[in-house]
Length: 451
Image (cartoon, rainbow, N blue to C red; front, side, top):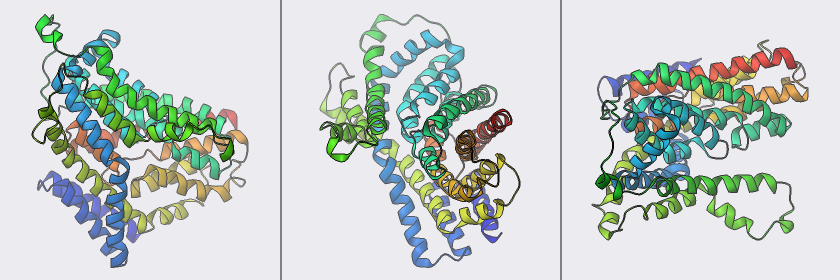
């Protein structure tokens, strides 16, 4: 109970210090991490190691990805490529359907691509579309964020559901089928949330003009890259990452000496860091004439790096806070406390939700919950193939609930979208609660007819 009390106090501190006293989130998160670690009795040496490891591991995973994505976004914006993307997409979706388009794009992209990377890559497109349509950036950002989250937690080949399926010995193909169905329902719920709630929130930093259908002057469009050319820096990295993931699935059981010689190159190019850097290379072809000053410290690249710096340090501090929570053992305490409840298929959902909310990482929540559920599957009547698949998806649904200050993805979404903490809690945190709850209820309804 003391761990839970300390967690609540830490979250209250982060909210009050940033919202009321305007403390920078970087400082608030680091202070909260040390505050929580000292109160819960983590040895001082281990506490410092957890803070450093959490910061470093988070940035190791997405630091370069954030910088590269920001550079791509800067080139799209400066060259007018973002406007070309927006105009082309709006011709297809219509100006009123931008959130639906972003939700579906996120739903597809996050199957092979981590939601953090997917959001960074697609954020420039969302900004261009929402500004072109004259709606709040928040609507598209939340639709994209939750669309990415739906498949990230419930559909292999992302690591969380794959690992949970392996622990519970669930049929991966069945998990994919059930996960696709449940995540689609969740993504549609997130779209409704984005339209009904997020669209009403105006982000302070955004200029959102009233949309007027005005013909663009030829001189305005002649100098900027076309739709297809502007898509390349976004689509090319995604294709490389997807190709690597697909090859990983195809050749998963192939002996090492029988693997094709080109596979290491595909895996290398499909690493998010490499793929995004290659995306930066393609972005260099967007200007009609590339000039060295664009790549200088005071040029487009320099501006992008400075813009990325604030996002990086906040995201890293969020990783530190989450790692300290994990080190305290709060996930095990919550899981052990709930495993004796007689809740059937809802039990894995609730355990995963409690662990996710407490320590921030969806993957940790899924892996921990699967380990706790393994010895209980028989006694709960969840030992059939369909029941195992539903359990894995229920764990994934719970691992969405909720994304808040201890989750690095929360800071990626809010910082790239220009949201303050209050807006992030209202939209990203509440949105993941709605999305995860809808997914959990959907799994429960399916279980009534299949197990």
